[in-house]
Length: 292
Image 1 (tube, rainbow, N blue to C red):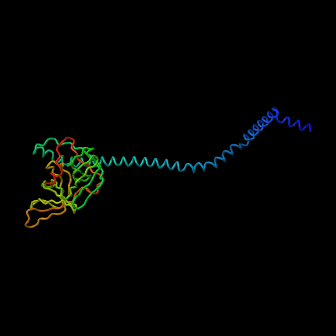
Image 2: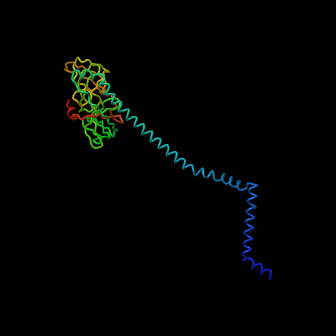
Image 3: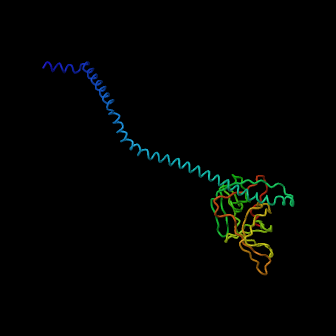
């Protein structure tokens, strides 16, 4: 009985706590020594990594996929923007060539005969086609450029192949273009091969052009190319317009008639280029041109 009471009294002794702490320290040192010799902890860590790494991989898959998708999207967007910029530059260069080729061919002769001054430099405004209307009575399209780009009614509009039409009306951010095939539209043209000048009228329903003011003895054959003549000052000279597809010389009539297929894509163009003089010059209204 006395020994039991003494044991219980020693249980709260600080010296007993110190012995326990010393025991734990010796045990820890012993375990560290055993682990150092047997590498048990490293083995445990390696086993734990083998178990956890697949879990990390599964968790990391969506994050890697999201990063890859973001990089792909950024790269694709940059490529699309670069491609659109290149296509825009190409369209403007093609429009520039349309006017430049003609000037190279006839500049010297026209300046000598008509005493022309140096031709006005052209500015080029690219517009995206927003809508197209090809009903039998009106051929129009709308582009996403307007007075904000300093566009005015009457300016010639082309695609990468040739003349499409001219600006009919504008708002701050859009412009309506009347196509050369519109039944109310007419423009001065000339035959490239012969230099003969005439008027080309919109065919309307058949989406062609009509040349109805030709002399009966006109030197015109199927396949002849007609271009803008520059007469009237509305359209720059030398823009490709159409290719003659049929000729009629009705007996008893005063004039011969011809049909011509437009060279430009017209309703199939996604972008167009508006030709805008760099220097201020009067631009005749569409109604004046339509009257011939």
